[in-house]
Image (tube, rainbow, N blue to C red; front, side, top):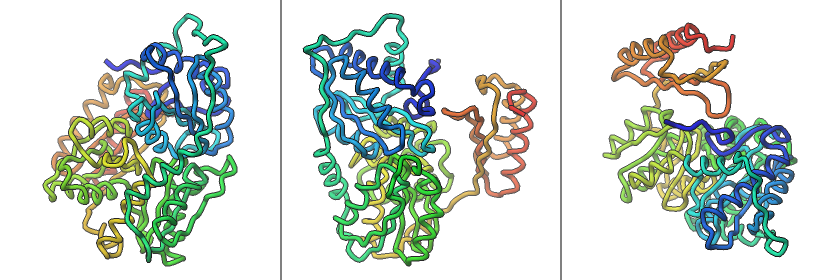
Length: 449
């Protein structure tokens, strides 16, 4: 049985800044708890944690509170400033760190923020690790502080950023002759992404790279690929890439302005690395077209719950090199342990360059089944299996979709929403199935009318 988390959601701790749990007092307590957790779990070593942030308005406040709590337990901190989330994973994996924390709310608007935790292997905290940290946060005793002569120190980690840039550059090839547009979402990639593509010789057109603390993800980036699509068409570029606020997502655009989602990126990357592994991992939300494409290559698709952490865990289990989400979280274990938007774009641009074909031609062989996602606001989140009308209708619908489509029903990990995703051979069938499911949910009386 899964234990309900008090703080952790699908991807770390997240909420509105200056509201619980992201008040300075609570964040400091989380820092204290994290330091206590590390000291208890690995008592034999002196701990150092790498901390980064995205450029949203509240990140400085949250970072200061968190570091204050962490250093009070005797843990040292290397502060790397504004970096993409995957940079934290990279630093921990390659350096002598006990863990890493990213201050970010990813693709959310600026008023949100959060904390993402990485263990000493550079992997996102597992559910067990999240549970262990929550036990410390909510224990009834006062958390221990370090003696005055053992208080942790804060070191500037800016020099590590060059190492991360070189890592990204080493994954690609020389891109001279390509005109590439990048939309940095006024987020954490705004300095690193242009530098990497310039170093690889591309002619770079950079957009939304002037963060002011409030404009992160605002009408731009991976959630709004129509922006970069328009720029690619206007400027006659070879391709475009859009990242989200913390840089762990990438959505691509071909030279005609067609948007290429995470499923198609996974398909091409899996084909490219097929000599290294025949196993590919995606979530339950990924399109049947991806499964069909991979099957044609003699490759196997493994599905997980939504969340790139679950994708990463499954990839490790089955030995997959490529995995990810339709939303653009792409993991290539050859180069990293978490989704990395800049890495994904460098690899895709390099594949286009090496194949010497227009990007649209490379991706046109991947069929996409019609898919629709409906979000319903709910009053509560009882276990889905306890909803009689929903379960009965779900069984009927799945018989109807057998061999013709898929149905996925799940609660949002961060909002009071029930998500209903239907994928089928026709829009008419999709709409009919969604109507049936929504009617059943209303009859179970959990919908907020």
